[in-house]
Amino acid sequence: MSITSSSPQAGTAARTTPRQGRPGRAPRTLAAAGLAAIGPATWGTTYVTTTELLPPDRPLLAAALRALPAGLILLALTRRLPRGDWWWKAGVLGLLNFGAFFPLLFFGAYHLPGGVASTVSAVMPLLVAGFGVGVLKVRPTRRTLAAGLVGVVGVGLLVLRGSASVDLTGIVAMLAATTLMALAVVLSKRWGRPEGVSLLALTGWQLTAGGLVLAPIALSFEGLPDHFTGANLAGYAYLGIIGTAIAYALWFRGIERLPASSVSFLGLTNPVVATLAGLLLLGQTLTLWQVGGLVLVVASVVVGQGRRRPATTTHRL
Image 1 (cartoon, rainbow, N blue to C red):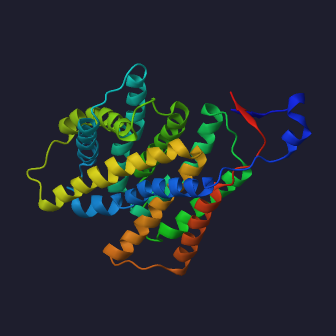
Image 2: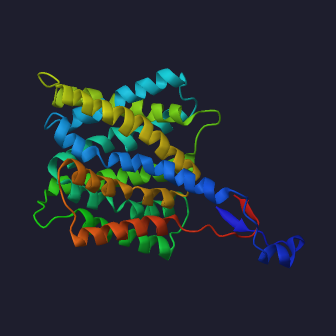
Image 3: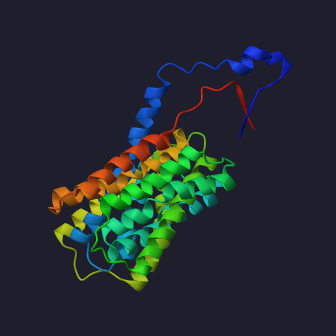
């Protein structure tokens, strides 16, 4: 929480004269946003990867094989384990980001067209704004709420089809997954990162925690397929290394360096990439309405980044 200094010693000039921003701060912020956007942009390929490369009807197995191997690899590379209260914090974040989120996400991907799933997930900026009120004590601005609504409308125009079937269980699963991820963004912003711990180590803790929850459940309820094809192995490797280990490390970096609301809007790049993947890989075409939706989504992401006020001297409480 921040308050503006208004002590007599500060003087009128200190209260009314904007503080000059540091040279190069805007480019650094833009770079942080660009790197963070790589995460959800990569996740936009999850739907086509799941439907085209992975074995059918095994969402829990897909979730476990996406999380646990990547987590163990990062633990081996960083050689760092949690300490103190970060044992339970890493467990909570791992459950929200992976242990519960992944199976719900894959369930939604199996039971919904990619367009419907993406539209449901587009409400995340609004959910982050809501959680931010209770957890971060930050009230969303009208600009944030308006941009969030525009984003939902834009994603709907971009990815929905008139023939899209709606599975109620898939809708509930995607909404629950999106809610968990929004809560994880807010908690990650509040808890930060332990001093001296790299982002790769923090990512590895969460992936391993989530994967350890998922693995026994997946093996018990779904088991392994009779055999893995080369396409299956390629799909799991892509999702685990590119779409998880690297993508989430960049995503967590964005959460650390940007406002929670700004990061949540970057998630809207997910359906954009999902649509482009359909164009390039599945031979789909764009209608005029979809082009309009694409414009609205891009506008929502830009507006959602907002402008930091060059405000007066502040004190962190």
